[in-house]
Length: 264
Image (cartoon, rainbow, N blue to C red; front, side, top):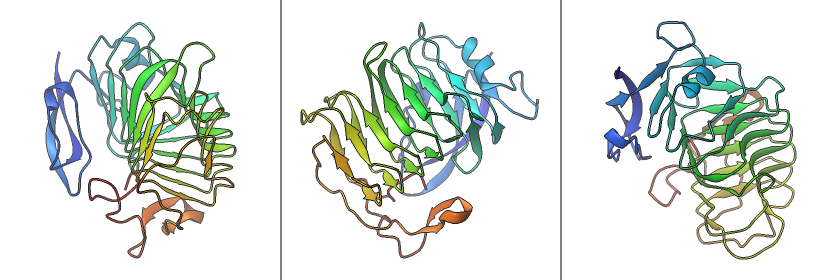
């Protein structure tokens, strides 16, 4: 049965029926068709994101209401094009609580949007295979990499857009293969062990309009594209995990779409 929920998106949102919610310059509240709604308080059929994903079919839209979800989330590898949409990174938190990763993406064509992803023993987002989309997420305080694009069990790649990736021990984004299926745009990648890293520079990844700062090395074995800046993003209060942008932040209105870089 189709349920209805509300998700804060921008005026540029299009194609709601296919869950193609786009980022934007101003936020509004628009109704979104949802096949499954998850609520940590038990107000819907599903309290667990994992249980919802277990029941998802091709093209399913799963909306996750505000709350803390202490689980390591794994997308199914035999289902395609699931959209897992949170209520915003300041409202919907997935905390892996020391498990390997907060979210594992496998299969193909999934979308992950609107979450804080933290507490992974190794990674915030682990992409084991397939090509996926990760947008409007805060990926912070994971034990190894913020995003890990692997080739160990397949070929993992992603379009990473409008994410804030901070305070991950080893690197912000690590892609084993530097190929054209991966893009990093309009993100803030700061205060990680390293910034955007690959094993071999093949000039494939699209890396444009990002802010990289204080990562050790900002670009390693990847080619820097246009519009990137190396400046302190000036978070409101990083010590208290407030990663919204201060009024004087150089990331304000600096994204390729005229919006702020990062997820806020």
